[in-house]
Each structure stands twice: as structure tokens, then as C-alpha cells.
Length: 155
Ligand code: SME
Image 1: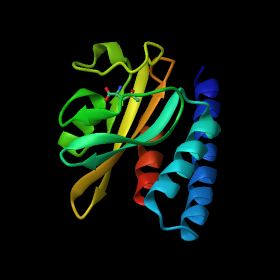
Image 2 (image 1 turned 45 degrees about the vertical axis):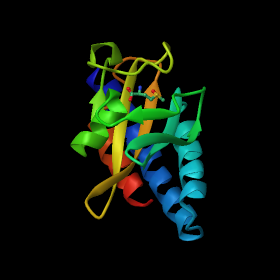
Image 3 (image 1 turned 180 degrees about the vertical axis):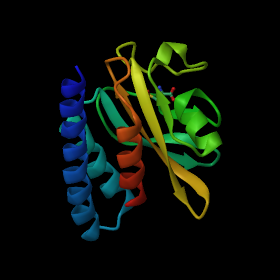
């Protein structure tokens, strides 16, 4: 069991390490925020096969849907609402092992079981969030948090 866990963790570390290098290279050649969010969402999504991977941007006091991969999602989320609105309000990553136990979780899809939301900060303010949903419970852990926080710093 410990061995299996180690292998699984190692696989994740290696995937994120490669992803971080690829995203660094990609962003060096492009400075348009939407183009970069679109490619970053696609790269994360297809590396891990998540259920939904995308961005919400802070526009006029709301989170507005940005580039994503996966099924249809809510277009707008209010400050402090759901996992995304909480990540914005607290300016802190939210790792949710079971979305049904998160007060106020916004269910864009009943298939979503666990979630991670990472805020993107510019000059001390949240300007967007990266939201990833999984159709499995407890998909995200400290490894995801650490790497995804490093990845959004590249944006
Ligand atoms: N579940 C999110 C809403 C966004 S969708 O999952 C894509 C939330 O509670 O903030």
C-alpha cells in the first residue's frame, strides 16, 4: 500500500514537473492572457484527464467564466459563493475532498465529486482563479496544491 502510494505520488510529481516546463516554454512566446489560459487549461486537463479544468476571471465584482476544458459551466459566480468565490474571498487555495460537504458548493455538474481552486494574484489582488473538478472523491492533495500554485504564478 505504501509502495503503491509512493508510485502514484511519483507519477503525479513527474507529470507536474514536465507540465511546469512545458507551460514555462509556452508562455515565453505569448503574452495574451486569454490565449495562455486556454492552452494552460488544455494542458492540465489532458495531462491528468480531469472532469473540468478552467479559469474564472474577476470582472466588475464577479467571477466570469474564462477558457476551460470540459462540459458547460456556470457563467458567473458571486464573491464568496461556492468553492471558487471562497478562494477569491480568502485569497487562498481551496482543496475540497468531497464537494457535497462544502457549504455552498455550486454544482455545475452532479458528476463532480472533488475540487481544487487556486487563486491567481497580481499586485496582492485576486484577478482570476483556476478551478479543477474531478469525478472522483479526494483527487487533490498537497502535491496538486504546490504545483498548481507554481503553475498559476507563470500566468
Ligand atoms: N463548483 C464550483 C463552481 C464552478 S464549476 O464547478 C466549473 C464552485 O463551487 O465554485
